Length: 93
Image 1 (cartoon, helix red, strand yellow):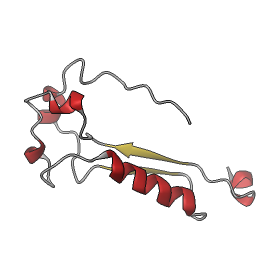
Image 2 (spheres, helix red, strand yellow):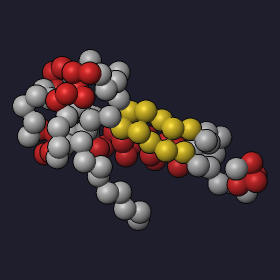
Image 3 (cartoon, helix red, strand yellow):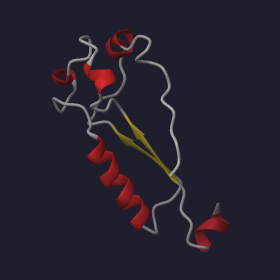
């Protein structure tokens, strides 16, 4: 990775917790008010962080959690049942 950095390439990943989406909103066992900040993340917040990381030439090799202090606990693990726990496909642009 050090060689990539010298060429101006940075590598980071974003790790959002529960985001406000229909699949999450449809699960009554996951009320947003149970999250520490009282709501789930919205995609605009993920996008803002993504833009910040792209513009920043110094930050590299990081996995950035976007969780509003919401760490998946036993209560949330029990509430997330299939199809909610199904991995989502990520496509590149």
